[in-house]
Every structure is written in structure tokens, then in C-alpha cells.
Length: 243
Ligand SMILES: [Zn+2]
Ligand SMILES: [Zn+2]
Image 1 (cartoon, rainbow, N blue to C red):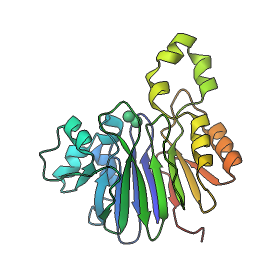
Image 2: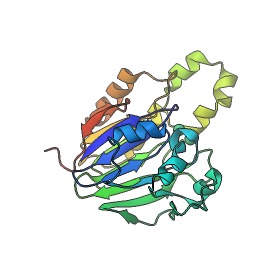
Image 3: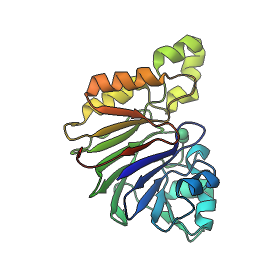
Image 4: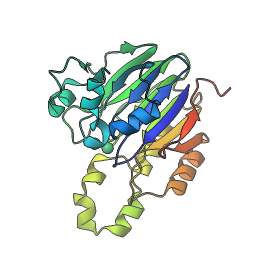
């Protein structure tokens, strides 16, 4: 399995889990042309797209994907917010109920964010094992056993944000209220059993309130794991075992 990052961050998010035979698109918050390019204009192996919530940086191309005959799976609340519910390619899932797309088993779960019905995903596939995908959240209320790979938001560093904003601005800041800080990211990771984890991929880094190298080093040091930052175009091996 490969993880391909089309883009990550507040300007757009889209990630592909791609095996020899099938691919899953996670988020579609980039231009449809960028998605088509990432698939070399061939959607034949794409089993569907899953979307965490309605914000444009996660859902921008939802209608275009449906137009190309791709099923897009999201909560009812997300489809309602995007006014896509009536499209026959709009599939709604229930939180905490596992569904299958190809060989991908997907369990969506609730998270807190300023959206109608946002979620995170626990994705299980024979090649990449159990993958946790969480973004656009303040903290994660759950822990997950037997994870093999983790894709997690590390949005801002409190110290960097505080240096740029005064105290009132810091408290009022929408990002601080709705996104995961580096500190919370590390705590969330450490709350889980990481013994079988091969990769930790940091996503949705803030342009102005983060520091890529420092984030990567901090998480690597705290977890002892291989850490990558999800820059546009990154492709990494994403398997259940390291070999
Ligand atoms: Zn976002
Ligand atoms: Zn959002």
C-alpha cells in the first residue's frame, strides 16, 4: 500500500490509499483537476471517496467526483450541509458503524469541530492494517487498539501562535478552538498503544503557526516512530508491517 498526499492544510486536503488493485480517496478538498492528475486520469481502481466534514478544504470537489461517477461517503449532516443529499452518488454512513469499500473496512467516529456532523476514520485493509485518520478536531475522545499507521492533524504550536497574536486574539482564534495543537497531537498519540505503528503522518499543518521540522522532531522524539509531514506530492510506503 502507498499513501499519496495530493495536498494537506487549510488550502486543501486530499489523500489516497493505493494498493495494486484498489484505491480509496480520503477527502476531496482540492481542485478536481488535481485529483484527476493524482490518479493519472484513471478512476477505475477507485472504490470511493470518504469525507470527514463539509468545509471546503475537505469537500471542495465533492460534486465533481459524483459527476465522474464516484460514490462519496459522508455523514448525513455533512451531505446536508453540502446540499448533496439528493445525488445518487451521495452515500451516508452512520457513526460507529463499519462499512466496506472494496477491501477497505471503514469505521467513522464522532469528533468535535465547527461543522454539522464531522467525523474521523478508522480504516482497516489487509495491506496497511489499521489506519487512524483524524483531522480538524480539538482532541480525540477515543483510543484505538492495534494501530499500524496513523494520519493525524498537528495544526499549530501554542507558543508560535501566542508569539503572533495577543492574548485576546489567541482566545478568540477559530483555529485554536477547532484544530489540534502539536501538544495535543503528541498526547493523543501517546494515549494509544503505538507498539505496532509503522508510520505517523502529520497533516493539516498551519501555514503561519507551525514549524515543519520542529513538529516532525517533536513527534518522533515523543513516540520513537517514523514521522512524515504531509506535503503535497508526498508518497510513502504504508504497510501493515515495516517490510
Ligand atoms: Zn480543514
Ligand atoms: Zn474544518
